[in-house]
Length: 207
Ligand code: SF4
Image 1: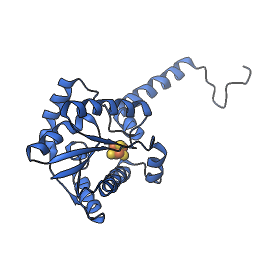
Image 2: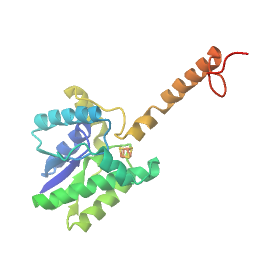
Image 3: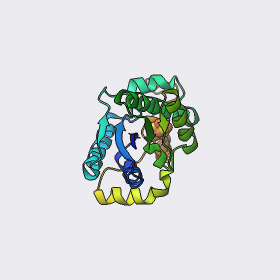
Image 4: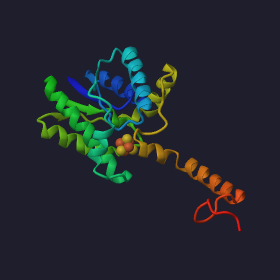
Protein backbone atom coordinates (compact mmCIF):
# COMPACT_ATOMS: atom_id res chain seq x y z
CA UNK A 1 0.00 0.00 0.00
CA UNK A 2 1.17 3.53 -0.79
CA UNK A 3 0.21 6.49 1.33
CA UNK A 4 0.67 10.23 1.20
CA UNK A 5 2.09 11.06 4.60
CA UNK A 6 1.74 14.64 5.71
CA UNK A 7 5.07 15.49 7.36
CA UNK A 8 5.31 18.22 9.98
CA UNK A 9 9.12 18.12 10.35
CA UNK A 10 12.22 15.96 10.03
CA UNK A 11 12.52 14.64 13.61
CA UNK A 12 8.83 13.65 13.71
CA UNK A 13 9.07 11.73 10.44
CA UNK A 14 11.90 9.34 11.38
CA UNK A 15 9.93 6.84 13.42
CA UNK A 16 6.69 6.90 11.36
CA UNK A 17 8.54 6.26 8.08
CA UNK A 18 10.38 3.29 9.56
CA UNK A 19 7.24 1.95 11.29
CA UNK A 20 5.20 2.18 8.08
CA UNK A 21 7.86 0.43 6.03
CA UNK A 22 7.99 -2.37 8.60
CA UNK A 23 4.34 -2.97 7.79
CA UNK A 24 5.03 -3.04 4.06
CA UNK A 25 3.53 0.43 3.53
CA UNK A 26 5.27 2.80 1.11
CA UNK A 27 5.03 6.39 2.38
CA UNK A 28 5.58 9.48 0.26
CA UNK A 29 6.00 12.59 2.38
CA UNK A 30 4.13 15.83 1.86
CA UNK A 31 5.59 18.87 3.58
CA UNK A 32 2.88 21.47 3.96
CA UNK A 33 3.09 23.55 7.12
CA UNK A 34 1.99 27.18 6.75
CA UNK A 35 1.88 27.27 10.56
CA UNK A 36 5.68 27.41 10.91
CA UNK A 37 7.01 30.88 11.72
CA UNK A 38 9.13 32.85 11.35
CA UNK A 39 10.58 32.18 7.91
CA UNK A 40 14.05 31.25 9.16
CA UNK A 41 12.49 28.61 11.39
CA UNK A 42 10.71 27.19 8.34
CA UNK A 43 14.05 27.07 6.51
CA UNK A 44 15.73 25.19 9.35
CA UNK A 45 12.93 22.63 9.50
CA UNK A 46 13.01 22.13 5.74
CA UNK A 47 16.77 21.53 5.89
CA UNK A 48 16.27 18.95 8.64
CA UNK A 49 13.65 17.12 6.61
CA UNK A 50 15.89 17.20 3.54
CA UNK A 51 18.52 15.36 5.59
CA UNK A 52 15.95 12.78 6.72
CA UNK A 53 14.68 12.38 3.18
CA UNK A 54 18.21 11.65 1.92
CA UNK A 55 19.10 9.42 4.87
CA UNK A 56 15.97 7.26 4.63
CA UNK A 57 15.63 7.46 0.86
CA UNK A 58 12.20 8.87 1.66
CA UNK A 59 10.55 10.76 -1.22
CA UNK A 60 9.04 14.10 -0.19
CA UNK A 61 6.69 16.34 -2.09
CA UNK A 62 7.36 19.94 -1.02
CA UNK A 63 4.78 22.66 -0.85
CA UNK A 64 6.26 25.36 -3.07
CA UNK A 65 3.28 27.72 -3.10
CA UNK A 66 5.02 30.30 -0.89
CA UNK A 67 5.40 31.27 2.73
CA UNK A 68 1.95 30.53 4.11
CA UNK A 69 1.89 32.93 7.03
CA UNK A 70 -0.94 35.16 5.77
CA UNK A 71 -3.15 32.30 4.56
CA UNK A 72 -2.69 30.46 7.82
CA UNK A 73 -3.57 33.51 9.93
CA UNK A 74 -6.62 34.13 7.77
CA UNK A 75 -7.76 30.53 8.26
CA UNK A 76 -7.68 31.07 12.02
CA UNK A 77 -10.27 33.86 11.72
CA UNK A 78 -9.12 35.28 15.02
CA UNK A 79 -9.14 31.96 16.90
CA UNK A 80 -5.86 32.56 18.71
CA UNK A 81 -6.39 30.50 21.83
CA UNK A 82 -4.65 27.09 21.93
CA UNK A 83 -7.93 25.17 22.21
CA UNK A 84 -9.43 26.88 19.18
CA UNK A 85 -6.50 27.39 16.86
CA UNK A 86 -4.87 23.92 16.88
CA UNK A 87 -7.88 22.11 15.35
CA UNK A 88 -7.96 24.74 12.59
CA UNK A 89 -4.22 24.26 12.08
CA UNK A 90 -4.67 20.47 11.75
CA UNK A 91 -7.62 20.95 9.38
CA UNK A 92 -5.68 23.25 7.05
CA UNK A 93 -2.85 20.74 6.74
CA UNK A 94 -4.96 17.60 6.45
CA UNK A 95 -7.23 19.22 3.89
CA UNK A 96 -4.32 20.11 1.63
CA UNK A 97 -2.86 16.62 2.08
CA UNK A 98 -6.14 15.11 0.92
CA UNK A 99 -6.27 17.45 -2.08
CA UNK A 100 -2.73 16.52 -3.09
CA UNK A 101 -3.47 12.79 -2.67
CA UNK A 102 -6.43 13.14 -5.03
CA UNK A 103 -4.28 15.02 -7.52
CA UNK A 104 -1.63 12.29 -7.39
CA UNK A 105 -4.17 9.47 -7.63
CA UNK A 106 -3.30 8.16 -4.17
CA UNK A 107 -6.01 6.63 -2.02
CA UNK A 108 -4.68 6.78 1.52
CA UNK A 109 -3.37 9.65 3.65
CA UNK A 110 -1.85 9.95 7.12
CA UNK A 111 0.23 12.40 9.14
CA UNK A 112 3.33 12.48 11.32
CA UNK A 113 1.32 14.66 13.73
CA UNK A 114 0.29 11.27 15.18
CA UNK A 115 3.88 10.88 16.43
CA UNK A 116 3.85 13.89 18.74
CA UNK A 117 3.07 13.54 22.42
CA UNK A 118 2.23 17.22 22.51
CA UNK A 119 -0.47 17.26 19.85
CA UNK A 120 -4.13 16.49 20.41
CA UNK A 121 -3.98 12.94 19.16
CA UNK A 122 -7.69 12.10 19.17
CA UNK A 123 -8.60 15.33 17.39
CA UNK A 124 -6.06 14.57 14.64
CA UNK A 125 -7.30 10.99 14.35
CA UNK A 126 -10.97 12.03 14.00
CA UNK A 127 -10.22 14.93 11.71
CA UNK A 128 -7.97 12.80 9.52
CA UNK A 129 -10.67 10.19 9.08
CA UNK A 130 -13.36 12.78 8.32
CA UNK A 131 -11.16 14.72 5.90
CA UNK A 132 -10.17 11.58 4.03
CA UNK A 133 -13.78 10.44 3.81
CA UNK A 134 -14.92 13.78 2.43
CA UNK A 135 -12.42 13.39 -0.40
CA UNK A 136 -13.25 9.72 -1.03
CA UNK A 137 -9.95 8.59 0.53
CA UNK A 138 -8.91 6.46 3.49
CA UNK A 139 -7.04 7.67 6.54
CA UNK A 140 -4.34 5.39 7.86
CA UNK A 141 -4.14 5.54 11.65
CA UNK A 142 -1.25 4.31 13.76
CA UNK A 143 -0.19 5.47 17.19
CA UNK A 144 3.34 6.56 16.31
CA UNK A 145 3.82 7.96 19.84
CA UNK A 146 5.04 4.48 20.79
CA UNK A 147 8.28 5.30 18.98
CA UNK A 148 8.74 8.69 20.65
CA UNK A 149 12.12 7.96 22.22
CA UNK A 150 13.41 6.02 19.19
CA UNK A 151 12.66 9.02 17.00
CA UNK A 152 14.43 11.39 19.39
CA UNK A 153 17.48 9.14 19.60
CA UNK A 154 17.76 8.85 15.84
CA UNK A 155 17.36 12.59 15.29
CA UNK A 156 20.17 13.21 17.79
CA UNK A 157 22.38 10.68 16.02
CA UNK A 158 21.73 12.41 12.71
CA UNK A 159 22.44 15.79 14.30
CA UNK A 160 19.44 17.41 12.64
CA UNK A 161 17.73 20.54 13.91
CA UNK A 162 15.22 19.82 16.67
CA UNK A 163 12.77 22.63 17.11
CA UNK A 164 11.99 23.98 20.59
CA UNK A 165 8.35 24.87 19.88
CA UNK A 166 5.43 23.52 17.89
CA UNK A 167 5.51 25.94 14.98
CA UNK A 168 3.37 29.08 15.15
CA UNK A 169 4.31 32.37 16.79
CA UNK A 170 1.72 31.67 19.45
CA UNK A 171 3.32 28.35 20.36
CA UNK A 172 6.68 30.09 20.54
CA UNK A 173 5.24 32.62 23.01
CA UNK A 174 3.70 29.78 25.05
CA UNK A 175 6.97 27.86 25.06
CA UNK A 176 8.83 30.87 26.42
CA UNK A 177 6.08 32.24 28.65
CA UNK A 178 8.13 31.93 31.87
CA UNK A 179 11.12 33.56 30.23
CA UNK A 180 8.88 36.37 28.95
CA UNK A 181 7.51 36.87 32.47
CA UNK A 182 11.02 36.96 33.93
CA UNK A 183 12.11 39.51 31.35
CA UNK A 184 9.08 41.71 31.96
CA UNK A 185 9.57 41.55 35.71
CA UNK A 186 13.20 42.54 35.32
CA UNK A 187 12.27 45.49 33.10
CA UNK A 188 9.59 46.57 35.52
CA UNK A 189 12.11 46.45 38.39
CA UNK A 190 14.57 48.50 36.34
CA UNK A 191 11.86 51.09 35.67
CA UNK A 192 11.05 51.32 39.38
CA UNK A 193 14.68 51.49 40.46
CA UNK A 194 15.61 54.01 37.80
CA UNK A 195 12.65 56.25 38.52
CA UNK A 196 13.25 57.87 35.17
CA UNK A 197 9.80 57.42 33.69
CA UNK A 198 7.25 59.86 35.04
CA UNK A 199 3.59 59.02 35.15
CA UNK A 200 1.76 60.87 32.37
CA UNK A 201 4.83 61.34 30.17
CA UNK A 202 8.46 62.24 30.57
CA UNK A 203 8.61 65.65 28.87
CA UNK A 204 7.54 67.97 31.69
CA UNK A 205 10.25 70.11 33.26
CA UNK A 206 10.98 69.31 36.87
CA UNK A 207 9.30 71.58 39.40
S1 SF4 B 1 0.51 25.16 18.55
FE1 SF4 B 1 1.14 23.88 16.79
S2 SF4 B 1 -0.74 22.79 16.16
FE2 SF4 B 1 -1.34 24.50 17.46
S3 SF4 B 1 -1.75 26.18 16.07
FE3 SF4 B 1 0.37 26.42 16.68
S4 SF4 B 1 1.55 25.31 15.14
FE4 SF4 B 1 -0.57 24.66 14.92
